[in-house]
Image 1 (tube, helix red, strand yellow):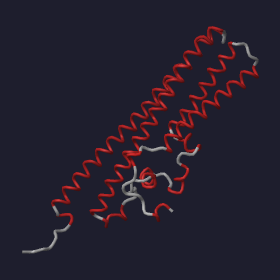
Image 2 (image 1 turned 90 degrees about the horizontal axis):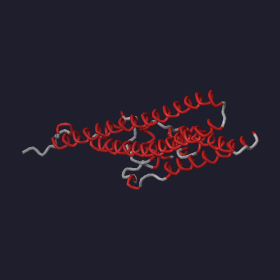
Image 3 (image 1 turned 120 degrees about the vertical axis):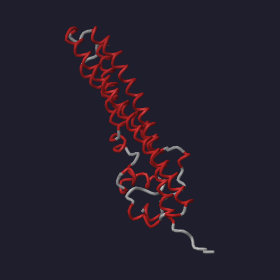
Image 4 (image 1 turned 90 degrees about the vertical axis):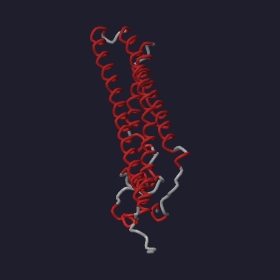
Length: 231
């Protein structure tokens, strides 16, 4: 009786493992696509609400000449826009965390592929490790810039950060209208609204950075990158 092991590709057990891994991989790809679609839909809904509010306020301003009627309509309307924006930012942060989870899941599956067929490693350009470095390699983010993840510059480049600037501007406009109703001079209005914008921007940025710097503990790396890959 021959004791030779069958080739890896012809081993029924290995073939079954590859089929299971491939099925899960396609499932994660589909789920990641759904995550992207929801992110874009949320942003589109918010921008549509913002555009509608601006158009409505422009029509009211033509009639009221920026008088008390305009202020009484603009403040509640812009407050709804700000609330929608904050809700959208929170949901986008959750979706980004979900996308990170799917990327790590695919990296773990890719690690399993390479464990079964290590000779294929030179042909993979995506990551095969489930730590931050591996995830960034799969996403296509420059490995040399991995230390910038969670920085202020990186935070305002992603979708939640971009919306944070818009929401902070809306908050500044609400405060400007409020102090205008109180009869403050132009210098006071500019100073107060600018301060409101800065405070809102700092709060939203800190919120976004906290989400980036404190990942889900359940995603602790099981297959971390070798030291050479992190250097």
